[in-house]
Length: 131
Image 1: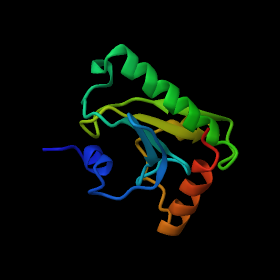
Image 2: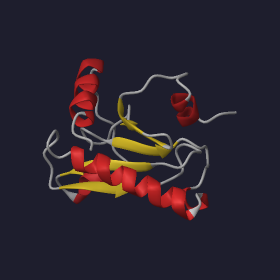
Image 3: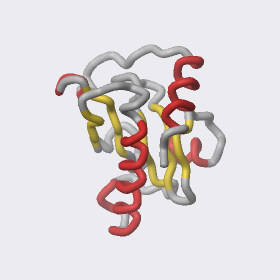
């Protein structure tokens, strides 16, 4: 069975898209820990990030870097944190999270509740800055 992320890649499930290339996709997390919490995924469904071949993993990181640079002008923060957990969805992915403090990088708290309009606006504003 395809992962939820593969279903997003295939257009079966909508997302708040930030950026897309032939190999990678970035979109807002629908259960964000911080405003602007973004996921970067390879389009190829591979469960564990360290099972990606070296070039594909390097490409994912470079893609994530471009997305991360577009976040602070839209969501002012001290840093954009990077996390790879890999337990929540069986599809490799990188979390990019705007941070004001270390506690912002916690996955143990309730997600933020943002309206569809807020999510769409946020995605569009970040997407406009991805180079």
